[in-house]
Length: 341
Image (tube, rainbow, N blue to C red; front, side):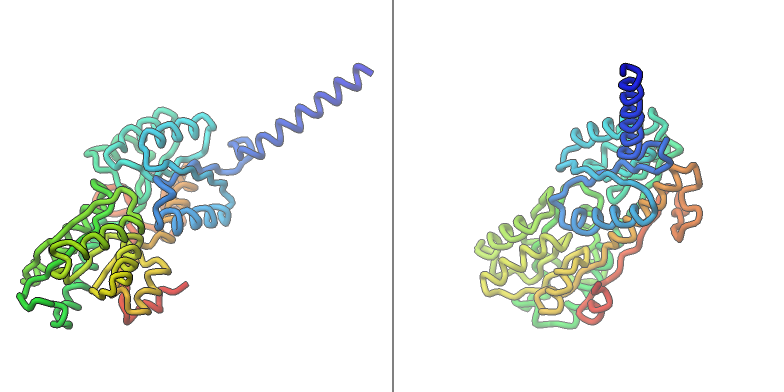
């Protein structure tokens, strides 16, 4: 009887061990495990576009991906990376909370000898990417979205003289910035307005507001406050550094019965609807689908010890940044139907 119990107990232990390996997708199972995060699930674009595509595409490639919410806290992300390392994931795919904290994440990956793909938020620390030979970046050229948005606005401003409500030849604008210090927020803020200056058109900033969450609620609240302020009747243009904040601004404008030229960035499905309805004049495609796919492709290659872009359609930039950059595209009332899913 005791021998039988021992055999049964051993069988149970073996079964549990196998189940554990299968559940974790460890190296012993032969499955690549990607430990990933999104800096904040509250972000419309990151949670609504990139997260589902990361999951879908990884599954299609036979990889397991575990995605956690860093809730906008770099300290929380640091702890999450430690947990992934303790689980012995095959590769890390990290969306930084603070782009200035890249070195700490890279150092953790390097110490554990785990490949690392940073995505969507590019490190701002000099030399961070050069400190580890198994780290790469997937994202965009931050300035490009602002340049494209700015050119759309300049062209439309020239084509619509009635937008200059006080006929002073100056663009009086308000701007919803997004997260302070975020490379995209900073570049878009600069480049979108610079396009007017480069075109010889004078501009006047009536108000600018930052929001670490890039949120619709924030866009609504600030736009509503601006409309009832002392300069509310002077606003001629609304510039939004993402579609989420633009949606809030549109809600506030509609509630006040006011119509103003308004532009965003991301080309979310809802933005395309607002363009179709004449409530939004343009946006810029921030290609989260291809950013997600490139992130997964590079992660799988890195985990397998291959060159990061081997066998893929992606190419590393030639500027030494170890980056795959996905281009932005303009979305206007003339071409928005092309971007419908």
